[in-house]
Length: 185
Image (cartoon, rainbow, N blue to C red; front, side):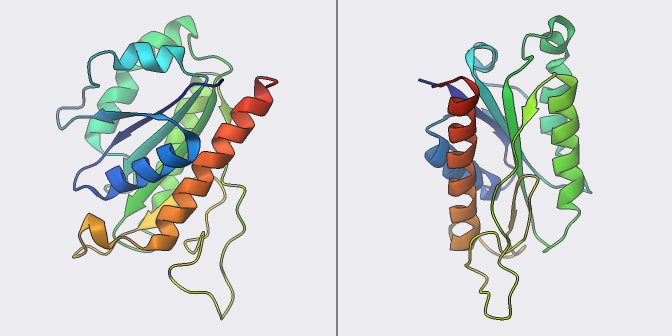
């Protein structure tokens, strides 16, 4: 049995819905970074015990939110002892625009995982990029390095495109499968 943790920050609820979909697919524990940039009680213990850590943040100004950055900086204690070395890592993000510089956020998460000497997992999903493609298709945003979602700035979290949520769920499944394979299960 593998243990997977999804650590994320959500400003308005959209990234929370994405995190829930990822966690559903992965069978993972959710660890929300709060409005002050802190983990819930026991959060660090859960991350230390996890075989895989999936990180998520909204894309704000081309990178992670300051709350997620505070968490990332605090993870330097685990980095110093290489406590997360050889864990499986993955990442996801959401923003209001189709591009929104989401790749910069995924690069930040990837770099953080590499600093922790982790093993990165991408989506493993082909993009929906034909003329017949629909906004609710899987991987419509077309990311390979991590799950990306787009939520219109005037849309509630309940109005998120179903395709983005399904992309997140399938991404979580892939991370769980790779983690089990990596552990030899």
